[in-house]
Image: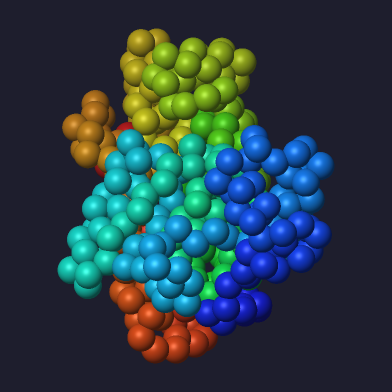
Length: 340
């Protein structure tokens, strides 16, 4: 695995920024504190130098630029989704027991927002940083490649990663559902999903599903929601899907909330599940065992990701970790119930 190029514990100084921008350190300091008081020309020079050098202002008291705080930054796409909230709860508990405090950021599935949060958290000289998935902007990659901060990318697997990885293959999730449906003889299928621009991991699950179904001679119709997993839009799109493709025998969904909307629409139309249409989700959320019929789904290791991420971070702070120990594939479990 390719390693990040690190500067050790050395940080870019304000003086280096000033020299590159051809201004005084006091002008750089003024720009960072009160940018409106710096001319537009000099502000552009300073920001260009900051971006080029990857400079991060140290907000820790006492100017201890070479010391690590007891803060660990964690960035998730949303704190309201129980997928990530349960991982955060486990991660926080294990790191708190070791004397660390979490600084949590919500990226809202936006790379630019993630970049902003990474820049802010790194200015606190954190002991570690946890990101969700592999989708980061080029500036985020540059910031992290110039930092000595240990980084764990969680909730995904299958790419080299920036530093350390704890998760599972979303492509494999799609394959598992497809294999289950194909074993029942269902080859005319659909995949209903949140929009791929919002959730690249849902796109990977779709690819795993599509590749497996098509390799077996089946067909897949893709239907994407415009926004979040709202039951109303899911129901409407499911109705349109079934009207345009009455041959569909099974519908795989990017998550359990989408699957719930699909179930509601099928029941509204009086379609027997699974006799007429099989339905499967992803997440094994709390309600899935109580739907009518109970939902077949994929269970990701939500708590285990939090536990193993904490352990890997803590180990990396006290000793060198090499090879396969830096990349943990925790796998998933197919939960078969009556819907498929």
